[in-house]
Image (cartoon, rainbow, N blue to C red; front, side, top):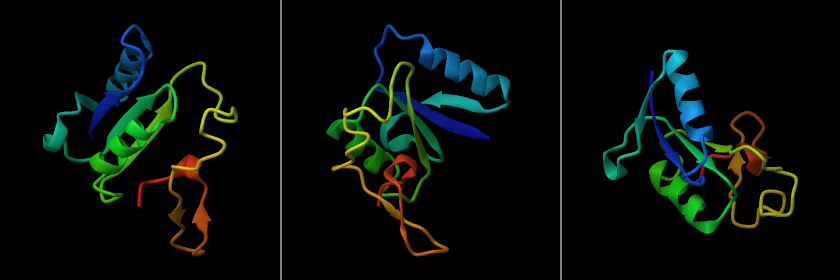
Length: 110
């Protein structure tokens, strides 16, 4: 399997290289996101939710056509008041089996 990786974390963080190394040890080929050239599934590592990150995920996933996983970097609490718990800008996704909206913590952009 091959994925692309993009980070919104601090350039001084070692977390991204640790994640990349762990994925490669698991047999997953990791490459850097290359704009419009990036195809297939992707992983975005973030320090916090912000409009730029949301737009990046929406664009890179082609509005949910491609799979993109968003992971919080270390030291983040998704129950904090930094945008994750309020979720005003993060879309929800309709569940295939129930037709209900899925929580924004496990979303693909619409």
